[in-house]
Image (cartoon, rainbow over all chains, first blue to last red; front, side):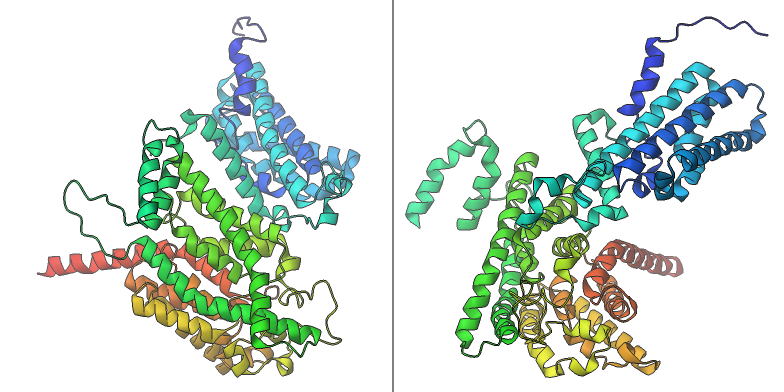
Length: 217
Length: 385
C-alpha cells in the first residue's frame, strides 16, 4: 500500500469545490449541461427539489465510489464501469422515491431513470473523480449537484409562480386575490419552451454581472 | 417651426457629452430627427445612400396599414351590432365605436414597446430606432378586440425584449416581433385568443343574441361547419369575425398595392406565398378525401390571417429571406405550411402565424444555400473558362 499523505478536510481548495459550481462554474448556466431534465421537471417546485436532491445524491456517491476504484479501473472499459455505478445508484434512488414519495415519483416519471444519461454525472466522473481522491470527489459531487439544483429551484420557482400561481403548491395568487382583477396564470410558463427562456434569462443576468464569463468571439 | 427649431437648438447642449442630461442623448436625437432633417453630413469618405432610410420605409408601411386599420375599426362596430341585435347604428357610428375600442390597444402597444426601446437605447448608447413604429401598429391589428390590455402589455414586453432586444435590436431579430407577441399571447392565455366569443367586442361578458355564434370562418371549417361559413364575397370584403385587421382581404390588398408600388414590401414573397397556399389547396382538392380538404383552394387566401400575414408579416425585411431566390422558396414554403397547419393540425384553426414564425427561423438557412449555390455556379464558370 502506498502511503497516503494526511490532508485537512476543509482546505481552501476543497471549499472551492463546493462553492464554485454554485456560481462561476455552474453546470447548467456555465457548462450548459443537464439542460433536458432542467426543462422537464421544473413545472412545479416540489418535483424540482426532489430531482435536485436525487441528482446531488447520485453525483456525490458515484463520484465517491469511482474515486475509490479509480486506480483499479482499466482505462478502456472505464465508461462501462462508470455507467454500472451510476445505474445502480439511480435505481436505488428510484426505488427509494417510489417507496417514500410515490406522488412525486409519479410526477418525475421517467426523468428519475434518465438521471443515468444526465451529462453532469458522466462529466464529473470523467473530469474529476477519475483523477482525484475520494473526499474531494465527494465534495465536487455535492457542489455540482447543488449547482444544478439551485438553477432547477430558481427556474421552477418562476414557472410555478407565474404558470400556476402557487409556490410549493400553496396558492399564493389566489390568496392575494388578484384573479378578481382579471389576472390569469400564464399558460406558456408551463410549456417547456419557457423553461429554456428562463434558463436563458438566468444566464443573461449571470453574465451581465460577471463579465469574465462572456466567451470571446 | 422656427420657434421649435430654436427651442431644440437651445436645449441641445444639455444632451451633449458632459451635459446635464447626457444619458438621454438618444431620446433627444430621436425627437430632433423626427421633427427636423438632421444637419449632420458625412465627414470622411463617400457613402452611397438610398433615399429610402428606415424612417421613410416605416412611414410607408404605416400608410399601407391604414385601410386595414380603418376597415377593422368599422368591422368591430359591425360585428358588435350583429351579435347584440342592434339595428339603428349608422356606418359612422359603427366606425367610431370600433375605433374607440381599438385605440386603447394601440396606445398600450406603443407605450410599452417604445418605453422598452427607449430604455434599451439609453443602456446601449444607441440611437432610438424606428423599427417599433410598425410593430406597434401591427400588434393591435392581429389581436382579438376583447383581449385584456395588461395581456397586450405583457406580450409586447416579451416580444420586444426576448424577440428583439436580446438579439441586438431592430435589424438583428430572428423572429418577427409582432408575431412573437401574438404567439406568446396565444400560448400563454389561449382562452383569450381562441374560441367563438373573443373576436366580437363585448361577447365574452355575455349578452349576445340567442343562437348567435361569433365563430371565425376558420373555426367553422375546422369543425366541418361548412354550411354556416360566410360567402366568399363576405370573407373577401371582411365583414366576418376575426382579429382586428385581418378580416378584410380587400383592405389588405390596397395596402399590398402601396407596398409593392413603393418597393417597400417584397412582391416576390407575397406572390410565392399566395401561389404556395393556392397550390397546396388545389393539391388537397385533387387528392380527394372529405371535409376540410375539399373547400375551394382560394378560400385559404381570404380566410383568417393569410392575407394580412402575407402582406405585412412574411415580408418583414429583417426576418424574411434576403436573397431573391431565397424569397421565392421562403414564400412558397410559408404558403404551403399555412394550409397544412390549417387542415391537418387538430389543435390550431389558424396556421399563418405559426407557419411564418417557423419559416423566419429557416430563412437564414435558405439564404445560406442560395448563396452557396451561387458561389458554386460561378466557380464552375471560372474553371471551365
